[in-house]
Length: 351
Ligand code: ADP
Ligand code: MG
Image (cartoon, rainbow, N blue to C red; front, side, top):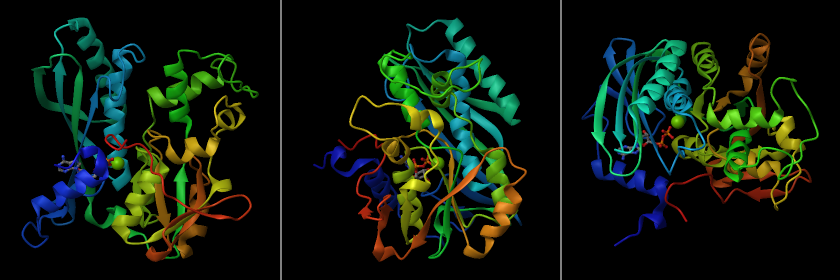
């Protein structure tokens, strides 16, 4: 018997994929099957249906006492929207399955759905169905999101080529820090010291926590990258830059070089004085749930993208480049040391 903790989530999905053994020619309407942010199925000429599913399990992905039901509803929609964004698509329909422990009140479910409704309105998607069952001891929310994309615009994980530049949207590591602050139960200066203030209404710490509680999927950004033909490969960062970069490299059969000093790190994360032996880079590389987009751009399109991006709200940052597969995935530190990237981000099973 092989313990799942020996192969991890990554290894397990690979095994499932291999076991199913579909050959492309047998199911040719499936343009993208297992192995990307969404599956893509050819509907009619030129139009693909895309689908993704994600689950949130109490005790694994959230705790009832650290997130309100309405925010939980919003977050569960947002994380699925992020996968559609990572393909460059347009989200359309949701199927929602919930496993409810008997201890939960009807009012809790009301609030959960109030959050879901608000999220669906802001992303212009509608709930078309789902399933409800009794779960013995914990709340389980599983969402399937269906969207569409023009075949010519589809951006896959496997499109990166040697020489492409690697970019990310927004900033990295805030969500993981937000989670730590939430879990410590102390969101004041006792555990962390912040030396920079932002807007007077909400403290930097509140902003960091909200990046964990309610991530902003980069839907508009993903769509622009796809429709303008700017991204050659793309993924949303759900398990941390290290893990999700590895997924792009595996699917594209390439290596990558990342410059640590180029990682976009928020002022708050940078200004936190850590009590433990951790640096902002640890959060940016290995922290999960940022839901930023990680994408590659052909060398000759870098000028285009920078020019195009001048009018966009969310910043983008070049953090490295794609190299040959046999060079591996490496980090370059401030002293130009080459450090092979061995560790990955969050894995549900690896110990
Ligand atoms: P994401 O983080 O974008 O949701 P994952 O890395 O979790 O994607 O999944 C990678 C691929 O494996 C996706 O195509 C997903 O649909 C597929 N997958 C994950 N779990 C299973 C499973 N139990 N059975 C079949 N396919 C799966
Ligand atoms: Mg994804």
